[in-house]
Image 1 (cartoon, rainbow, N blue to C red):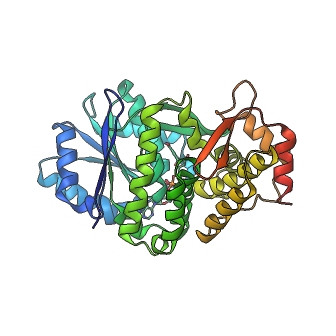
Image 2: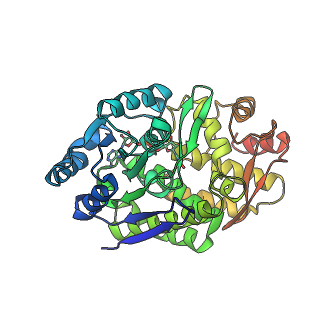
Image 3: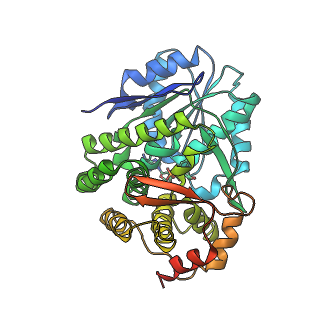
Length: 365
Ligand SMILES: NC(=O)c1ccc[n+]([C@@H]2O[C@H](COP(=O)([O-])OP(=O)(O)OC[C@H]3O[C@@H](n4cnc5c(N)ncnc54)[C@H](O)[C@@H]3O)[C@@H](O)[C@H]2O)c1
């Protein structure tokens, strides 16, 4: 089976992403955690649903090596990506007796990775953490690059910090238990990488979709590895989003607004991004930069992945503009959009007139 290693080459804080089916049940994961813990205390942060298949076997292995991890279990859901959840993690870290050399190991999806990463970033002014992502979205996106944080009722990810993990350990076999809707949601971010950076990858993902949806491990490992490579390359060039990293936000200006307007409950994050990418591609068309064929190809691939592509009829332009104003990507009151030039290339625009947003949304009416 395919195994990959990708370096995230950030000066002083570089780390390796390891991808291999079966990694989580191999001695390799124990070797990495043992060497990073340096005999310090470990706190595993995870979800109840992941305890039996993944966390308990890992704890057994760690115990055999003389390590005795503390486990803090957090209920699932984007609506729980809050400061209250992080406060409970601090309590757990104290109970686990984590000191400055302590290690947090997050085993879960993007919600837990972001919240657990932020707890690690802020506890004792920052301790080390390891990401063991278990959703496709977390494999290809949220576990890599060091963005950590939580939502406020006013908007998504408004609180947070950059804190790079010490290691990212990806076992595509964890996707065998992931609900199909979550798998598809993760595919939205994979498709995004093709549009923003890599035309041949977009074509390849489209061709691999039947195997991906059947959870073929080689196909999954291949798309996870290429997605991580692209993200690692972008983050290496622009860790704190002063320029290039913003291209990763394709679909996110509209997507985040949709999530906030619908109280983080109607859509999975990836579903909101799928709709956001289509709307933003249409906005690109409306200002005359995105060829209509690009939007068409995007829609076809998203539909083949059975992702939503239509903007909901009960959400108004005013709501989108208002939610957009609270988005942290908004600078000086100007909404920023990442818009395709063609498949594989985008630019960031802060000069999109409201009329273009209205026109793009009307195309869904
Ligand atoms: N930090 C970043 O750079 C970044 C990038 C993209 C997205 N994100 C964030 O990621 C979050 C979305 O992450 P997500 O899509 O992984 O959602 P999620 O973390 O809510 O996980 C989805 C669901 O799947 C369950 N689950 C997780 N792994 C499972 C498994 N292997 N088997 C069965 N069930 C499993 C979880 O319990 C949860 O109910 C959003 O908050 C988004 O803002 C962050």
